[in-house]
Length: 136
Image 1 (cartoon, rainbow, N blue to C red):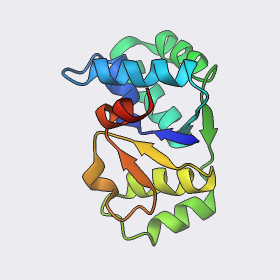
Image 2: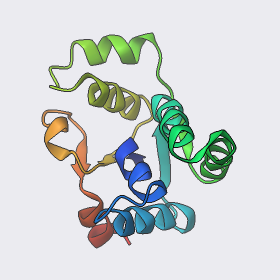
Image 3: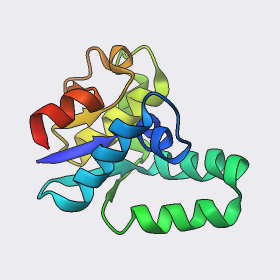
Image 4: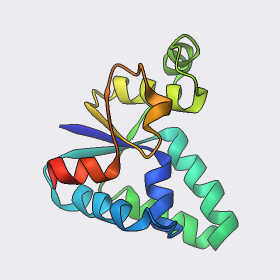
């Protein structure tokens, strides 16, 4: 099974955003120790760097990305993904890009706190708490 982690899940853990941080931590622990392939989209990598560098500094952000790449793959974002996102009908363009990258990587589940933004995504969308109930 392939799983894409939405940006908000990683940020919840890294920035200790309550009350979501614990579930995000458990999802990331699952990514490290389960026979499930986890992905982050290429745009998530750049967003993580930008947001965490502002909050915790460039050195922290670079190390975070290095650490994540030890146990997650990167779902590509290319012209096809962007064009598909433009025509997807999803209400949020960023989430449409996430969905397109997930499709290209043969992802079967997107883990996010913003499930409503993915309505119509044609991929199963799962809240971190639900993901943990099912797959941990």
